[in-house]
Every structure is written in C-alpha cells, then in structure tokens.
Image (cartoon, rainbow, N blue to C red; front, top):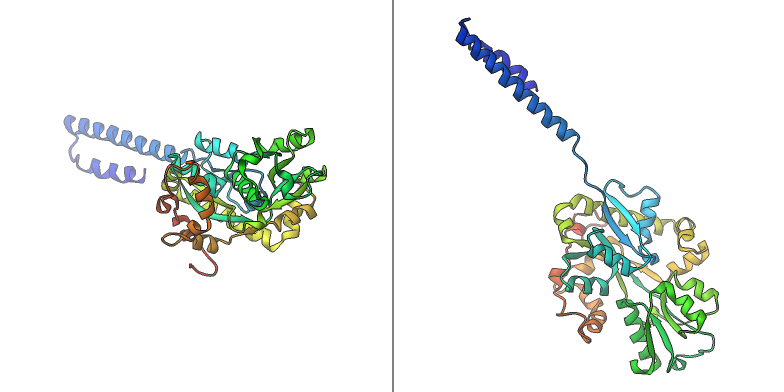
Length: 353
C-alpha cells in the first residue's frame, strides 16, 4: 500500500496540461492504481488470515516406554501448535490410524515398523526410543509352576511382532516346539478375561497392562530380561511429513528429548504425574520403569548411523523372526528405512557423535 501512495503523485506528474485527453488518462490511471492498491491490500489480508497448519499428530499406545511424550505434553514442554500426542489403546490401533492417514507419526516396536514399511507404507524411522529390559512379560495361571508346565497349554498372544518374538523365546527356554502349545491371538486388553475364564493358561503381556493380571494371582514366569536389546521401540514418521513439515518434526523430536530429560531428572515427580493415567500407584510405576532402558538422543543417533546401522545388528533377531515365515517380503534395506536428518538437526548438549 505504501508503494501505491508514492506512485500516484509521480504518475499524475506526467499530466502537465489540463486537456480532456490528459485528464481522462489521469482518471484512468488513478482507477488502475486504486485497483492495484485494493488488490495488494486483499493479498495482505489473505496472508494475515491464512489458516495455520494443524499440529503434527503422533500416536502412542499404553506402553510406558512412550510416556516421555505424555510428560512433555502435560507439563507444557511440547509446542501444542506443532505437536499433538494421541494416546491409543493398542499398537494395532496406532498402525491402523497411521495407514489411514489419521496420524503423521507413531511410536512402534521395531518389528511393527519393519512390517509397516515392508508393506509399502512410505515412512521412516527417525529415533530409537527405548528397549525392554523386563517390561515385557509372560504370565501364567497358579497351577503352572515351571516353564515345562506350558506343554499343551493355550497361550494368549497379541497379533504383534513383540508378542510373537516373546513366544518364540519362551518356547526356546521351555524346550518346547510351537505345535506343543495352542496359540490364541487376542488383543492384550482381553488377556485378563481369558485367564480368569480359564480359556488360556498363559498370556504374553507387557507393563502396565500386566498389573491387573498380577493382582489377580497370575504370576510372571518369563520376561524380556532374558532377551536384552531385542525389543526396541522406535519413532516412525510419514515420509511426506518429513519432506513437507520439517519444523513440526523437529518439534516432535524436541518433545521427546525434553520429556525424557524431565523424567530422568525427576523420576519420583514424573511417576506421581504419570501413574494415574497408567492405572498404577507411583511405586508401581517406578517399578515398571526399571524394566525399560531409554536411549538418549545421542545414543539414538548412534544406533541409526553407520552402514549398516547399529540398529540393524540389534534388530537381527526380529528381522530373522519376520523373514522365516515370509512376513517380510524382502530383507530390510536399512538406507530406505531410516532418516537421520531430524536427529542431526537437533541440538545435542554433548555434541554430535
């Protein structure tokens, strides 16, 4: 608009005489300038009223390993205009919403991420969040005293890679073959009912969903401490979002980092804040946290880097498990699975590895 105000006198200055033609030209010129000024003003108004992009939606299930994102959200450490954390009941629901375009990102196990991307879904792993060190557990009915007692038993297992991996390791420890047990594919939220009714004698579960089962007298007989580094949670983002919304992705990475720092600096306060949402007491919540090992942003980037990346070595058991029955169409091409750019853009207090 300031340009219009300056041009008008200059434009009129060319009309030295007051002939009819010159006056008509001047009038036409003024009209053109007014139209141009109004158009410019309209563009300014439209620019000022442009609807901002919605926040990036990241889906997580009830696994406590994703709670740093919840803590960052609840304590105002995350930018709500850039990131919105959506809590879902299961990883199956997170995968479904991600496939349907209702989520931009999700916390998944590495096996779930491998299956998702192998199926043709265009996404990348941008961070390694944690590994299970006791948080995944097999619970059994009181009459089963040892692993050998599972022979002929019906076992509830969620239709997910972690459940299948846990089952395989359980059977290895028990010296049993798959055909010597009966596997029922049930969502983790149905395991308690199945155990109480006697429909199954064991269930492959995880914290905090296992807590009500333990209160009912179903006891742990095997957990992920026997398989260190094999169960890993990762952060997956749709490739389109990585390409078109880097600032929102950076805000997501920052949310995880600040939430994790807050949890580790004040574990008692974090437990008090997060335990009610998990249906646990603060003491129970702290006990569950001991079954997890979180990766710092620097450690995460180290795991994602290299050719092949260190994550490929850590995930060898999962990859083999998925390749044998043909769940994966082809061996993972790690260069196509990982995007380290967001992690490399993030500030690291101890420097970049």
